[in-house]
Length: 210
Image (cartoon, rainbow, N blue to C red; front, side, top):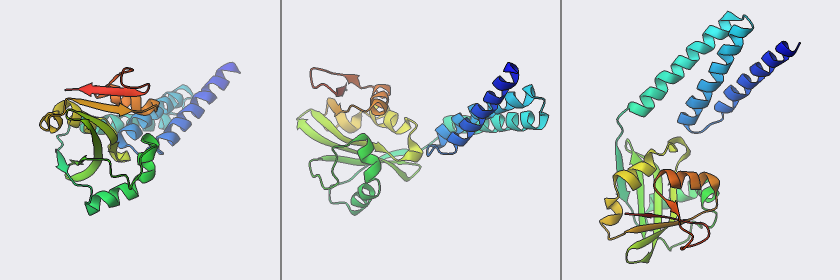
């Protein structure tokens, strides 16, 4: 009886994982979660003797592995496009993604004119993210917005900006970035792209130096 119960729970777990994967807006997260869910479902199928379930989900695992390999190994074209505060597309972008932006930057206001460093990041010629910063001094910029649209939240934009192209900042004499946040999700992202906690600057301050 205990064995049957455990198998049933395994099937429920697999179903939940697959269902949650379909809710992911990020294709990378969708593929990873669907891969895990399909692997659990495949295991469940073989354990209960349902070979069609086992083999079908094993095939789905292989499909996810194939597409994840393509995602992580394909060549992509990134570009930084400077814009000014009066740009019409910038205003439209902020209006459209305002609710998403304020999830990570709750103090952001779309009519705020403090930003004096603005650029889009394009990915294969599609606008994928927005950076807005305010100069605190000649060599320090506070990050007002560092936003990637849901489809492109796989760290590649952050790595492109902060790791691969620091000259976008150093070319303007910027040596330090400061970002204030209490969001665990945002903090994890900042750490992955080279920011570190800096209590000397503020309680929730994270900085990155070039």
